[in-house]
Image (cartoon, rainbow, N blue to C red; front, side, top):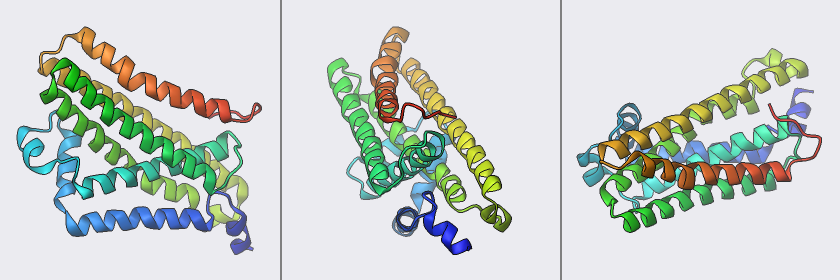
Length: 239
């Protein structure tokens, strides 16, 4: 009976297992070919500035390990968003939904990278914006890594009693989604605070920082959220 429940569970299907294995495989590959990346990630999270040495020696947009981590993080974020939409908004499950969400997160990240480059060229603030560009990438990666164990525990509850008891399983999953949403909100706020701190340190007027946050940070997120809401069923409810 337990195997039947897992086979029909939209949050624990075979394709979800493959996605999770791909994410873990990427993390294992990074650990093998570039173990220093974990030290870079920890430094970038606990320090408000990346440091000139990191920008010069450890960060490169053409670095395949950094690209791999960004793709991995987008996959993890898409998986969490999939769980959220299926459980809370009652959207029809399936791998197609995850692929769409994966494309949205990749597109949003790529769009921010391009816009930051354009803003740097336009306002001639390449130094500060270059540092913030890598800050965005690294915090995106850290958020994705932080969500990996949470999404796994939502898909496959660790306690056998939870697995065999549908109400208990749903109760844990809903709490897991709330915890994940809290993590996403905190990371987003932290990133915006980092933008303010970095801008002030580079001598950028606060009005320009506010315009940047509205135009290149808040607006894209609001547009994506609006598009997601537009595609939800009318009777769906969010957590």
